[in-house]
Image (cartoon, rainbow, N blue to C red; front, side, top):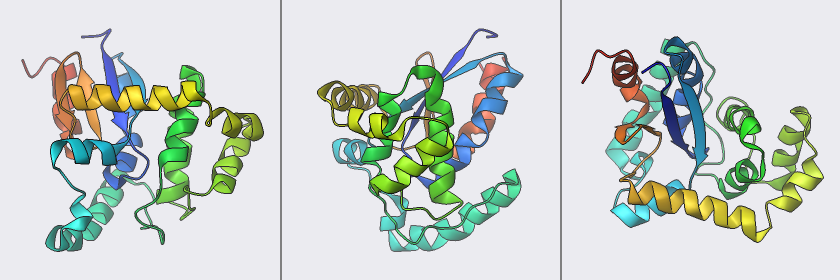
Length: 198
């Protein structure tokens, strides 16, 4: 599977997506695979499938905070639970859809790092503008482009496709039609790409 492509359906509001985003490119590189970063609206997938965020279930929410810290320490990455949670991730996802494909990974990693490691409110346009500027992008042009029908439709199309393919949470990965859901499935994804799983 040396020429495999990993489709990564992500929403910046998801903490486990942030964790997976810190690992996925290295995992892909080990197998000569590429990653296609696919922004989608997790909330719409929840609505379509009857799923809901773990934090909205009190007993899961209590567990979630400690679990996230364990994963962050395991990966050796920073994680500070943000003061604004949940966050409106729509703008950050539309920015991803407004960018050339080659820039989406950098944007996704930067915006999730800003939210999950630096406690920036990525629901605010000024925060998105600063992240874009820090990446050397034209923030004014980029944010203006997020309001165009083509960009809005691109995000809707990604979300509709994710739901049609069975996505009910984030992060979700596909290799062909084989789906892997969750940061904790990266080990299985690694084994699958390595030919250790049929």
